[in-house]
Length: 307
Image 1 (tube, rainbow, N blue to C red):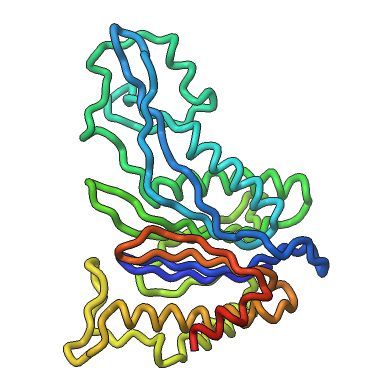
Image 2: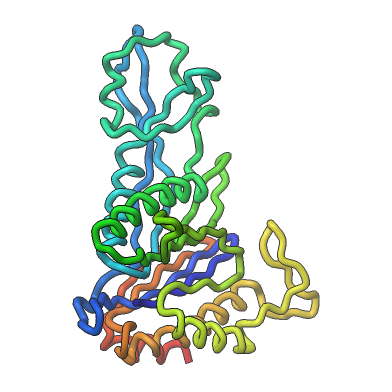
C-alpha cells in the first residue's frame, strides 16, 4: 500500500505521497512518483470547402492523478486514461441537436476526413466545451470499471485501486480548483463497485493504508494549528472570524505544515508498506503546481525546516 494526503482551497492545491512500490512483503522500488501530471486536449475539426481541412486543439487546464493500490491495475488505468485524454477526444456536432459534443474516437478523428460537411459545421469560440474535473472523472470512472473488470477476470482477485483526480480547470475564462476521489475495492455480482465523491475545499483526504490513515488523520485533526477558526465556508472560499489576526495565507501554510509533519515521518521510517522517496505537489494563488520529489535520506532536512 501507500499513503497520499490531499488538501485544497479555492486558490491552492497540495498533495504529498510516499514512493514505495511493494509486492506482498517484498519492496520492488522506492522512488516511484505517485502524483502524475497528464495532458488534456481534444481535437477541433476545421472545415473548408465541404471537407475536413485540419484539426486544431483545445488544451485543458493543469490536471493530476494521485494513486494507491495494486500497481499493475493502476498502470493499466493510467495508460488507457491518458491515451484517451491526450489523443482520442474529438469535438463534433450531435447528430440530432447539432450541439457541440466531445466524443471518444479510437481512430483519433482520422475517419472524419472522408466525410463531407457544410461550412457552418465549424465551431465558434463560445461553443467550445470546457474540460473540467467532472468531465475527466466521467472518463476515468469508465476506464477504471473496464480495467478492474479485466483485472478481476484474469488475476482472479478483487481489484484494489484508489485515485485522486485534481487540478486547475478553466471555465468561462475563470480558473478554479477541484478534486474527486474514485475507489474500486471489490466486486458486486461479478461487476466492479466504484465509490466516487467530490472533495470539499479545506478538507483533508487520504488514500492508501487504511490503518495508518486512520491514526494519521486523527493526529492531524487534533493539532490546534490545523483546526479551522472560521464562521463560514462558502463558494467564494474561507471567511475568518473578525477577531482572527492571521491572514488566510499564513493560516494555510500552518495547516499544510501540520500535514507534512505527520506524513513525512511515516515515509522517513521506511517501515511496512510506506517509505522510499516523498513527492509533493503544491500550488499557490500566484503560482502553478510544482511537483518535487525528495529522496528518503533528505527527508530529515525537509522535516527540520517545518519546526
